[in-house]
Amino acid sequence: MSKKTDQDSALMSMGGHLEVLRSMLMRVLAVAGTLAVAIFCLKDKVFALLLAPDSNRFITFRLLERAARGAGWDFHFQNYDIKLISTELSSQFMIHISTSLYLGLLLASPYIVFELFRFISPALYEEERRYSVRIAAWIYALFLMGLAMSYFILFPISFQFLATYQVSPGIENTITLESYISTFTTLSFMMGLVFQLPVICYFLAKMGLVSGAILARYRRHAFIVILVIAAIITPPDLFTLVCVSLPMYLLYLVGVKIAGRLNP
Image 1 (cartoon, rainbow, N blue to C red):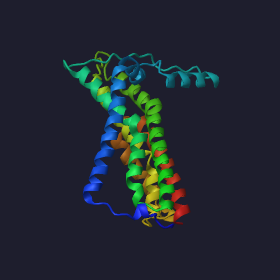
Image 2: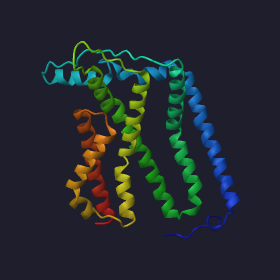
Image 3: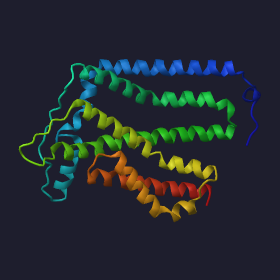
Image 4: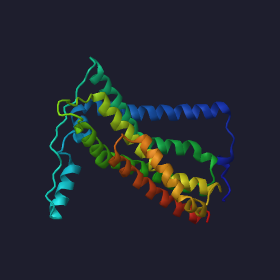
């Protein structure tokens, strides 16, 4: 490792650290708050995107039907157009506010990562700083990949199955807006976390806690654990469970390769 600079090695009092932390939090809140206000003002466009999977006209279904026709298979998704309801007087307004806050934090996440790196960088060696930038970039990229998979694949297909499933033709499904947004945000956030599996394997191997050989030896056990985790974080349908489990296992295998390079 290279030596730290004089500035890096300079000690700061506890009050100084707290002041730097306070300033950082204020900047993060200002950026996230500004984005949240902008999203709040763009209500129609934002909720048009969020509520797009509530019908069979969603882009994922159209692409799958087009691919099926290209393969010579006359396949069409069941026509459905779920009308969401609101059962509380203030629920739509409160959901508008909470969704704007969530999306504001999401869009501000690159800036939050940057600020966190600025906060901890004085305590790192030069080599560690270079690795930290790459790791932060990979964490954010993998998080966005998880969000994209949830939005375009997992949530639409899961919603289509559960919202149209009936035990009897006489029983009509009425889905509340709260249930829709709650499932959407929970699944999106969980998939963003699940996609961090290669980074977790990297850190465990970097600390010497695991090796590529150990992870490869227990890959069958890991698959069972992945199935259990996927069953916990996904809605109760088999197709969504498979759609989550397979990417998680592939990410685990990527983590095995990464760990094998650091700690064979």
